Amino acid sequence: MAVSDGGAGGGGCTPEESEEQQKRSEIYTYEAPWHIYAMNWSVRRDKKYRLAIASLLEQYTNRVEIVQLDDSTGEIRSDPNLCFDHPYPPTKTMFVPDRECLRPDLLATSADFLRIWRIADDSSRVELKLLLNGNKNSEFCGPLTSFDWNDTEPRRIGTSSIDTTCTIWDIEREVVDTQLIAHDKEVYDIAWGGLGVFASVSADGSVRVFDLRDKEHSTIIYESSEPPDTPLVRLGWNKQDPRYMATIIMDSSKVVVLDIRFPTLPVVELQRHQSSVNAIAWAPHSSCHICTAGDDSQALIWDLSSMGGSTASSGGKSQQPAAEGGLDPILAYTAGAEIEQLQWSSSQPDWVAIAFSSKLQILRV
Image (tube, rainbow, N blue to C red; front, side, top):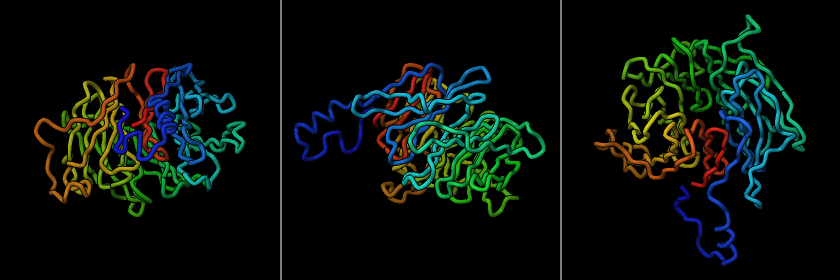
């Protein structure tokens, strides 16, 4: 999978430098003491190669570890000071989107509630900073399936729940900014597409877009059709070109790519996985690349620049379906088991992380 436009060597390398680059592996592996489910990259520029991973254990007490690659030894290490117990398995984890290190070092997790954890400046400990319950009428709540942290306005986090709602939190004021019934059935994922715009997918089979300036209405971008109302389980919004998003149909081997300007009709369907797709990640540095991973143990990277009007390279072609037979991936990596989690590093876009069974792998792409 170690392929990039520039190649590893670069121009004008000294022999020592090129030898050093050859020593650097393209794949690093960390084995956790438990099955990994939630996983994500740190965003801060001063914490390179740092990730959070969380357990999937069928018991109340689960674990979160913060791990980091030691560039000099090539080992991914867990820091015992930054490992902590977590109630229930987290469905997602995210570091604060703060590349320039202007904010406290925060980590969010979703499970029964949304929790915000603070990592001490000297990395000596992790403390629970906030526990946010969106159900005002009860100490109990519908479990959270996912959440997304707003890049543009990091005080906002949106959560999705099995109780059909999406909740937008203001974590600085520790209050619910907006809570709305987003779908007819469980909401499985949520993604921001800008300052006040988010989308969600649901067991009702629809992708809906919401604008916080007009909370009474939503736009249905896509509805699953084979068969109708098949649940949609994951959503990825293209940060480099917000006209595009991608979604995963439950138990399906295809990924549906959508253009929000042309609702209901997919721009392209990616159909090279051999079994269910579990995760999608748009490239953080390119508008036309996406990575997908699934139960066939494969992580595939696709170049969508041939999509109608997707990028400058398409020369302004009109919207048109993909060629007969469909698109092929440009890169493929086969892991040792079903890949359940996939994240593309926004601060180091040459690196993708995958989780399968108890292993975390980071891959240079």
